[in-house]
Length: 171
Image 1 (cartoon, rainbow, N blue to C red):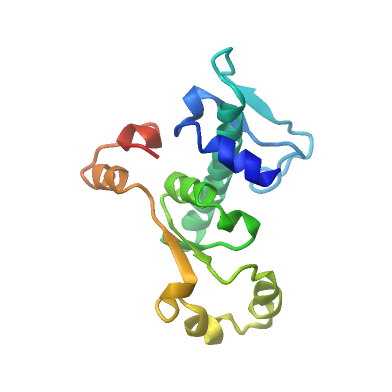
Image 2: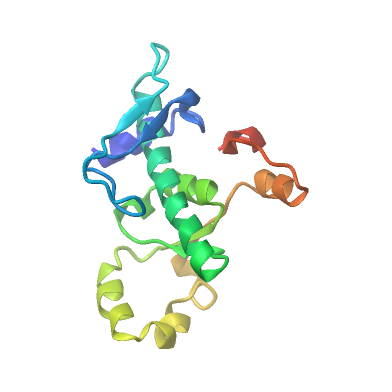
Protein backbone atom coordinates (compact mmCIF):
# COMPACT_ATOMS: atom_id res chain seq x y z
CA UNK A 1 0.00 0.00 0.00
CA UNK A 2 0.97 3.66 -0.26
CA UNK A 3 1.28 3.83 3.53
CA UNK A 4 3.67 0.88 3.52
CA UNK A 5 5.80 2.47 0.77
CA UNK A 6 6.09 5.71 2.78
CA UNK A 7 6.80 3.88 6.03
CA UNK A 8 9.55 1.76 4.50
CA UNK A 9 11.09 4.72 2.65
CA UNK A 10 11.24 6.62 5.95
CA UNK A 11 13.50 3.93 7.36
CA UNK A 12 16.19 4.59 4.71
CA UNK A 13 18.27 7.74 4.74
CA UNK A 14 18.40 10.47 2.12
CA UNK A 15 20.18 9.29 -0.99
CA UNK A 16 18.83 5.74 -0.55
CA UNK A 17 22.30 4.35 0.05
CA UNK A 18 23.39 5.40 -3.44
CA UNK A 19 20.48 3.60 -5.14
CA UNK A 20 19.01 5.68 -7.98
CA UNK A 21 15.60 5.11 -9.50
CA UNK A 22 14.51 6.46 -12.86
CA UNK A 23 10.76 6.11 -12.28
CA UNK A 24 9.56 5.48 -15.81
CA UNK A 25 7.13 2.72 -14.85
CA UNK A 26 4.63 3.79 -17.51
CA UNK A 27 7.02 5.51 -19.89
CA UNK A 28 8.13 9.10 -19.39
CA UNK A 29 6.02 12.13 -19.84
CA UNK A 30 7.04 15.72 -19.47
CA UNK A 31 9.66 16.98 -20.08
CA UNK A 32 11.01 14.15 -22.25
CA UNK A 33 7.83 12.51 -23.61
CA UNK A 34 9.01 9.00 -24.30
CA UNK A 35 6.38 6.30 -23.84
CA UNK A 36 9.03 3.65 -24.50
CA UNK A 37 11.22 4.72 -21.55
CA UNK A 38 11.45 2.13 -18.78
CA UNK A 39 12.19 2.31 -15.08
CA UNK A 40 15.69 1.61 -13.84
CA UNK A 41 17.18 0.90 -10.43
CA UNK A 42 20.83 1.89 -10.76
CA UNK A 43 23.40 0.88 -8.19
CA UNK A 44 21.37 -1.94 -6.64
CA UNK A 45 23.54 -4.18 -4.45
CA UNK A 46 22.96 -6.98 -1.97
CA UNK A 47 23.11 -4.36 0.82
CA UNK A 48 19.95 -2.64 -0.46
CA UNK A 49 16.65 -3.93 0.86
CA UNK A 50 13.05 -2.87 0.28
CA UNK A 51 13.52 0.28 2.41
CA UNK A 52 16.15 1.62 0.02
CA UNK A 53 14.13 0.68 -3.05
CA UNK A 54 11.08 2.55 -1.69
CA UNK A 55 13.19 5.59 -0.82
CA UNK A 56 14.83 5.63 -4.25
CA UNK A 57 11.41 5.54 -5.96
CA UNK A 58 10.21 8.58 -3.99
CA UNK A 59 13.47 10.44 -4.62
CA UNK A 60 13.39 9.50 -8.31
CA UNK A 61 9.93 11.02 -8.72
CA UNK A 62 11.08 14.12 -6.83
CA UNK A 63 14.04 14.55 -9.20
CA UNK A 64 11.69 14.29 -12.20
CA UNK A 65 9.64 17.09 -10.63
CA UNK A 66 12.87 19.03 -10.20
CA UNK A 67 13.60 18.74 -13.93
CA UNK A 68 10.16 20.21 -14.65
CA UNK A 69 10.73 22.96 -12.11
CA UNK A 70 14.02 23.91 -13.75
CA UNK A 71 12.33 24.20 -17.15
CA UNK A 72 9.50 26.31 -15.71
CA UNK A 73 12.01 28.58 -13.95
CA UNK A 74 13.94 29.04 -17.19
CA UNK A 75 10.74 30.04 -18.97
CA UNK A 76 9.08 32.20 -16.34
CA UNK A 77 11.68 33.22 -13.78
CA UNK A 78 12.33 31.94 -10.30
CA UNK A 79 9.61 29.91 -8.63
CA UNK A 80 10.07 29.98 -4.88
CA UNK A 81 6.88 28.27 -3.74
CA UNK A 82 4.96 25.24 -4.98
CA UNK A 83 1.44 24.31 -3.92
CA UNK A 84 0.61 20.65 -3.92
CA UNK A 85 -2.53 18.64 -3.40
CA UNK A 86 -3.59 15.03 -3.42
CA UNK A 87 -3.15 12.01 -1.25
CA UNK A 88 0.64 12.15 -1.17
CA UNK A 89 0.51 15.46 0.73
CA UNK A 90 -0.82 13.66 3.81
CA UNK A 91 2.55 11.99 4.17
CA UNK A 92 5.20 13.95 5.99
CA UNK A 93 8.05 12.28 4.13
CA UNK A 94 7.29 12.58 0.42
CA UNK A 95 6.41 16.29 0.39
CA UNK A 96 9.58 16.95 2.40
CA UNK A 97 11.65 14.97 -0.12
CA UNK A 98 10.12 17.03 -2.94
CA UNK A 99 10.82 20.32 -1.11
CA UNK A 100 14.41 19.22 -0.47
CA UNK A 101 15.13 18.00 -3.99
CA UNK A 102 13.47 20.93 -5.79
CA UNK A 103 14.82 23.48 -3.30
CA UNK A 104 11.35 25.07 -3.24
CA UNK A 105 8.98 25.81 -0.41
CA UNK A 106 6.09 23.37 -0.75
CA UNK A 107 2.67 24.19 0.63
CA UNK A 108 0.00 21.54 1.06
CA UNK A 109 -3.56 22.20 2.26
CA UNK A 110 -4.55 20.69 5.58
CA UNK A 111 -8.22 20.54 4.63
CA UNK A 112 -7.87 17.45 2.48
CA UNK A 113 -8.27 16.87 -1.21
CA UNK A 114 -8.77 20.02 -3.24
CA UNK A 115 -8.80 18.68 -6.78
CA UNK A 116 -12.30 20.11 -7.19
CA UNK A 117 -10.94 23.57 -6.41
CA UNK A 118 -8.20 23.17 -8.99
CA UNK A 119 -10.61 21.68 -11.55
CA UNK A 120 -13.24 24.38 -11.12
CA UNK A 121 -11.66 27.64 -9.97
CA UNK A 122 -8.30 27.78 -11.75
CA UNK A 123 -9.43 26.97 -15.34
CA UNK A 124 -12.21 29.57 -15.14
CA UNK A 125 -9.80 32.39 -14.48
CA UNK A 126 -10.82 32.87 -10.88
CA UNK A 127 -7.41 31.89 -9.51
CA UNK A 128 -6.12 35.44 -9.11
CA UNK A 129 -9.32 36.69 -7.49
CA UNK A 130 -9.52 33.73 -5.14
CA UNK A 131 -5.82 33.48 -4.30
CA UNK A 132 -6.00 35.53 -1.11
CA UNK A 133 -9.01 33.58 0.11
CA UNK A 134 -6.98 30.40 0.11
CA UNK A 135 -3.46 31.74 0.66
CA UNK A 136 -1.01 30.61 3.30
CA UNK A 137 -0.97 34.14 4.70
CA UNK A 138 -4.71 34.32 5.37
CA UNK A 139 -5.20 30.67 6.32
CA UNK A 140 -1.86 29.70 7.83
CA UNK A 141 -3.49 27.06 10.01
CA UNK A 142 -4.90 25.38 6.93
CA UNK A 143 -1.65 25.07 4.97
CA UNK A 144 1.28 22.90 5.91
CA UNK A 145 4.60 24.39 4.83
CA UNK A 146 7.69 22.34 4.04
CA UNK A 147 11.03 23.94 3.28
CA UNK A 148 14.31 22.78 1.76
CA UNK A 149 17.01 21.86 4.30
CA UNK A 150 18.28 25.03 5.95
CA UNK A 151 21.92 23.93 6.02
CA UNK A 152 21.95 23.18 2.29
CA UNK A 153 20.39 26.53 1.41
CA UNK A 154 22.90 28.32 3.67
CA UNK A 155 25.81 26.50 1.99
CA UNK A 156 24.52 27.42 -1.47
CA UNK A 157 24.23 31.07 -0.47
CA UNK A 158 27.90 30.98 0.61
CA UNK A 159 28.76 29.67 -2.85
CA UNK A 160 29.39 26.10 -1.71
CA UNK A 161 27.73 23.45 -3.81
CA UNK A 162 27.30 19.81 -2.84
CA UNK A 163 26.47 17.08 -5.28
CA UNK A 164 23.81 15.49 -3.05
CA UNK A 165 21.22 16.88 -0.63
CA UNK A 166 22.25 14.50 2.15
CA UNK A 167 25.76 16.02 2.19
CA UNK A 168 24.32 19.14 3.84
CA UNK A 169 22.69 17.25 6.66
CA UNK A 170 20.14 14.61 7.52
CA UNK A 171 16.95 14.41 5.49
